Image 1: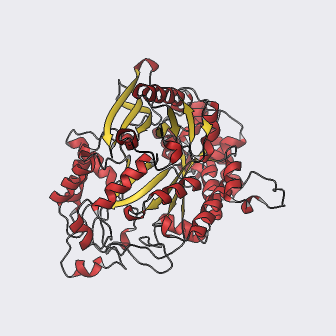
Image 2 (image 1 turned 180 degrees about the vertical axis):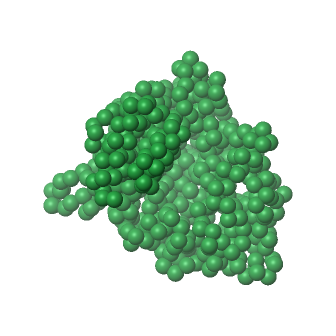
Image 3 (image 1 turned 120 degrees about the vertical axis):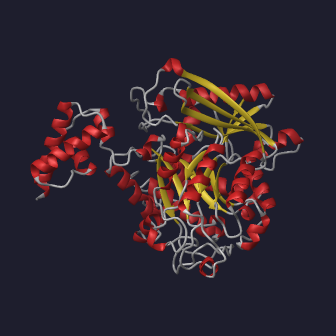
Amino acid sequence: MKKLQIHDIARDFVKQALKKGVSTRRDLQLLKNKFSVKYGISHLSSIELLKAYEDLDLVDSVFEKLIRKRGVRSLSGIASVTVMTKDYPCPGKCIFCPTEKDMPKSYLSNEPAVMRAILNDFDPYRQTVSRLKGLMKTGHPTDKIELIISGGTFNFYPPRYQTDFVRGVFNGLNFDAGGVDKRGRGSRQRSLVEAQHVNESAKHRCVGLSLETRPDYVNESELVRFRKLGCTKVEIGVQCLDDEIYKMNKRGHTVSDVRKAMGLLKDAGFKINVHFMPNMYGSSLKKDLSMFKELFDDSDFRPDWLKIYPCVVVPGSKLVKIFEEGGHVPYTDSELIDLLVKFKEIVPEYCRITRLYRDIPAESIVGGSKISNLRQYVQEEMGVRKKKCRCIRCREIKDDEYRDEDVKLVVREYDSSGGREFFVAYEDVANDRLIGYLRLRIPSQYFTGEKHWIGELSGSSIIREIHVFGQQIGLGGRDGAAGQHKGYGKKLIEEAARLTKSVGVPKLAVISGVGVREYYRKLGFEDGGLYQFKKM
């Protein structure tokens, strides 16, 4: 069938859907089934329906949200863009990592994210533009972007490559900014500083930038460099909390390195996404559960975000030989599900589990679980056991509606790496849903009396993260009861200022993403060298 005919059918579908008041995914699917039978075609895709909807110039926010492809991408309030660095040697010699030729260490060429990078020759500009266009094509707002740079230990790459890669990513975000600079250079040629400046008011603004590293590659000078690049979040491979297991797996660092890295990252204001790997060679179900409890019981750890990657045996890793000789026995699916259920019961309200399983194709797994939708199995098992996960992801409001009178301010305090953390949240207390939150840190230097190793942070508390949930709204836009533009962000910052004053700290700092600097300026923050500040 010709495209013109398909488009006509799609237009008719949209008209009927709006006439019938289709408002649920079930209703949408039933109508798709009806049209499929009527016209003898496959189900109309989200892209086809979005194109027809836009061409008809109709406005129905409920229907529009329904036809967004994988709407969950923007229900957390932002749209994520992941790009990948080229292959380069890694300082680690981990036995579980694959070492495929021409691939970044620990990645396989048939992983979805890697395949996208290969199609764009690992070029940061092309990868970014490609992902943006893909998101726009499927109807996702791209005003607020979280950039995630994957590929291994980023700061092991040559400094020039690091700068050029991040510059390419920012220029990619600014790809449709247009114009040339005074030297006649187009958007792709802008320097990093120029690209960051343009992005402050660009159409696709970087609200957060995430980089990967190892515990033994975290130090004061590297974190200052990360800030100059625009980094706001650091993903760090912790994997376990046992020096003997580290040695057996040739990790090349210690638990002491993890403690030190976590403290430096928090005091510099970074959000921390810890990678944790159950079923490592030398561990056990009992040991994994004990280490996971320690991750939150010991105040030197207590991550903000968490990626759980159960160890699997993959081709090209040294673990294959140990596995084939019977030295390593992967957990059964039922054992792994039971362990992950216990993990999720432990996670406190201030932490967000972003992954429970790594997206490795089943054909590349020699040993270990091949269940790609492991999170679903874990959630179902928790339901059977009448257990609930309290992590941020499981409690966030998404596109649920709520009543203003049920929204309350909740402040949770806890010690962390020698400092004090305030997890400030607006919650729908009637339904136990999280609408927005802010992380405020009183750095360890305040309690030790030492001068902060980043001079401008001396005498300052710091906002490490602020996030308001709900369907993503374009910058400056409003959408009924959506959480993002009901002023909760501003209210959270006001509470952070109140808490800062109550402790007796004279300044409030924020580790702002490049694309939200203007937002903080409007709230009275002034630019510093690496952060923005407001005097109390």
